[in-house]
Image (cartoon, rainbow, N blue to C red; front, side, top):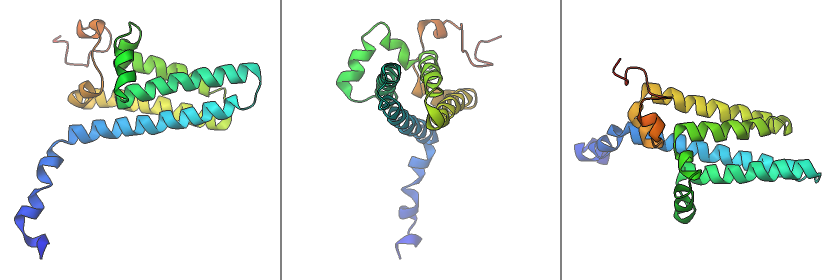
Length: 164
């Protein structure tokens, strides 16, 4: 019986010690699924074939595709191009992420019932990630880079991290 062998039970222990990595992977996966749903809603909205609906749907889909690449950090070529642009490097910080997500959500709220649902889920996810930052700062720092402003203590420093 392989279940009674101690070596078979211990193979999982080192993996369970990295709960931070599982947590960050879960948030990245949820983000990827949500951005994919947002893209689908945006294209459905754009399919109504009026000028503003096409424009808003396509622009929202483009921002979602960029944020999907940022969230999963793939494909490497696109991520490198984003990182090397002045605007793009801020998307890897929490401030950049919530700004983009807020913009996406505002447009999604105008896209009918599915848009409202995905907008609420988008805002809920970004609030969940912020909650993660308060409870699990190491996992939060693994997901996001710090901008120069954040690293100077301005903005979103966690309570207790400022030394006051």
